[in-house]
Amino acid sequence: MRFGVYQFTPSLWPTVALLLLLPLLIGFGLWQLERAAWKQEIVDTHADRGRLSPVSLQSLPDYRDAEAYRRVFARGNYDMDHQLLLDNRTHEGHAGYHVLTPLRLADSDKTVLVNRGWVPVGSRRAILPQIPGTTGEVLVDATIKLPPKKYFRLGDRDEEHEGWPQVVQQIEMNELEERLGYPLEPLILLLENDDEFGFIRDWKPVYGVTPDKHRAYAVQWFTLAAVLLMIYIGVNSRRLPREE
Image (tube, rainbow, N blue to C red; front, side):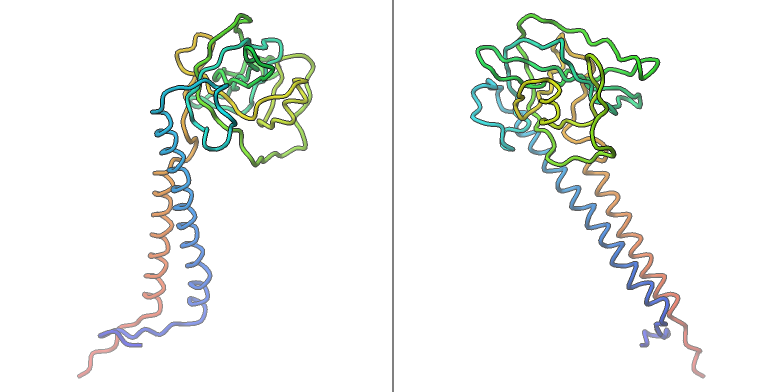
């Protein structure tokens, strides 16, 4: 195949390498775009529902996906004797826990978990941090977060601990109900920043890789695909000798 003064003659092994690598690089780029779109939808939903006026938690009929990121308020009493520390949470590069405290709703037999924020690990992981609070009735302003539907864990179960608080690796409602000894509503309340009984709170709709970073990664993969194609063309092309 001739293009002007260049002759393009594809050889076997460069062609095989191109056929193997090019779809892979493009596939990685498309996957990053899908992740960006998914996370962008979460960010947009969080912003839209955050603009709605807060409602009473008990006024909601159920806790479907449509209620995620809604601002709510609830009155009740913390169960300070049975608190959970969600492990492997970081803040500004420091390791720590998220404090999960059960809230027994007033005038109800329902209980919800309230994420009161981040606390650092102690000098040794065997020494759990102090997590003060109150046993009096509180009015909680918070944002609804639904627990994950899928889990990834390396072991079979969390290690059992004597006494309280207890350290957990995942928010698995069935397992947490077993630990606490009573049922929980299928949601988490993220405590507002101005609540006096909370810790460090830096709630974000998505953690880790943001939609913009996913898009940047996609551009990198597509760029690599374009470079690979140009190298393939260059390797398999030669300039024709000048005709006298």
